[in-house]
Image (cartoon, rainbow, N blue to C red; front, top):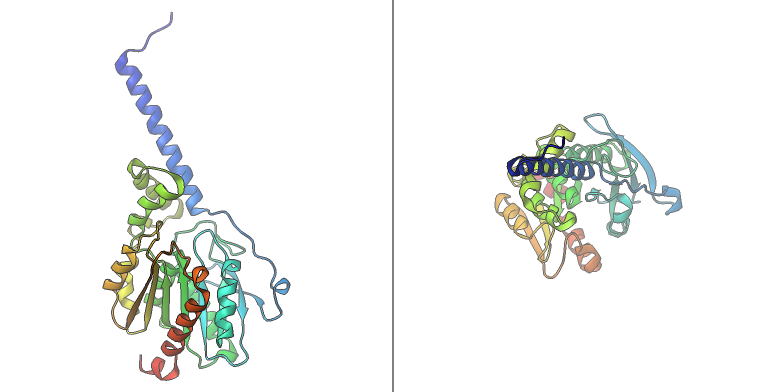
Length: 303
């Protein structure tokens, strides 16, 4: 005998199936977010003789792979941190441009990216260990003895740089390009823009699964709460006015929360983390001027 379901039972079964699909989809996207596709960099010797393959260890025990671009007479040294699902190759032109201005440069792959160790990304939180370890790598180079160290990050790298500088006094100046203020707020727009998912019910579920996969309270990661600790070291915030992934309001919130000395450069018509590509000469000129002034021996000695 075939038993027919009542309307109530059919609705309950449908609701259960929909809930199961929602949970499964949320877990899938959380896995994709915390385990980004790796883009493996090419070997340094295939790029240019001045680029050196290097590795260093983070405070929590991961081996990070990168490139060191030395300078014959460096004024200072700069750590450059890439964005989510990127690697060091995509910022090589920026690194070369700053090196040509007289700065020694360290480029690296974040944990769970490129050639570096790690299986999960926390989208800026634990990545602060990578930025701090990069600063220590530069500090220990004999040819950089006495040289100040700055840090430049884009998107996720900008947030990691803010967190790193808040805790690591070796970082004497910070440029944060396209940083978010809080991860939970950005998750809503990011899921809608990147994956065409509605904020409800997916945003809180995806964030929760990200927390389960990484063992980190990703939902409470807040660059706006950490940024005040960078002072009295100089800070430059950069943001595209047309940024759809991390709206420009994030930059204004970070600027208000930061303490002096601080600068805010909003670039009209620019989408997420595209300032360098849009106006390379102006971007390099502004960053060179900022780091040259911020990392000058007299400035660092009195900070």
